[in-house]
Image (cartoon, rainbow, N blue to C red; front, side):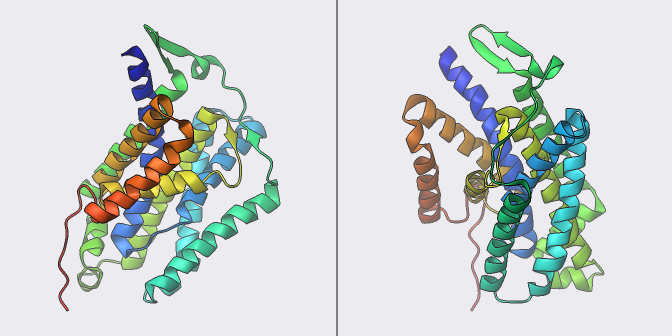
Length: 294
């Protein structure tokens, strides 16, 4: 039982990472029906920004986290303005190809500047290096901080979407973009704000992963990005609570398969879940099937 509880702690930690990334996917898709494959690479850049802040600028964890979130926010807005906005009324396949192109550009552009070498985050000291023991269950302070910051960011996002004017504008544009525009909502600003929020969450996830797993590389966003996308689909892509549920579910499945089965099969199981979802309930756990008039 104690071994099982330890696996649950690990699954919550991993699920928090997937949930943060999945929120960016689901927010953008909910607004403009775009699967932003470059989102996982913003997560990667957030990890590198945090690394350089801690290693070369000598900053602490929280200042590095804040700088990574701000710079990733600006990058997300810039990508939306340059790559996606001109194609907003184009065919979906064109936008999808552009998203893949932006993703590859960020990955190999980063590789060109920082090389493909694996970088190691500075060793955490003081409070960040402490561990809490509950019997045989070990919880590191890094895990506590990672989950705590994730919960705070999710709660802040839910507050913004449900209680602020920009959040109401986001929901209006998601429901009917043309009607929202006729009601005086600035669709371009709303979409940019959505990219900004999602990119900030991705940047935070990158730094949190850096301090938790300690190593980063230019292709680190590929597999976690795909799994976060699966999490968003599982919960119902376009639905924020669904992305949270999906993130923690995928994290639990991956950890339990690795802990009680074979770690080589964990990716296969996660992608098999995607296939089952698309066959059984394509709209996801919280999604609703909608009819379309012809």
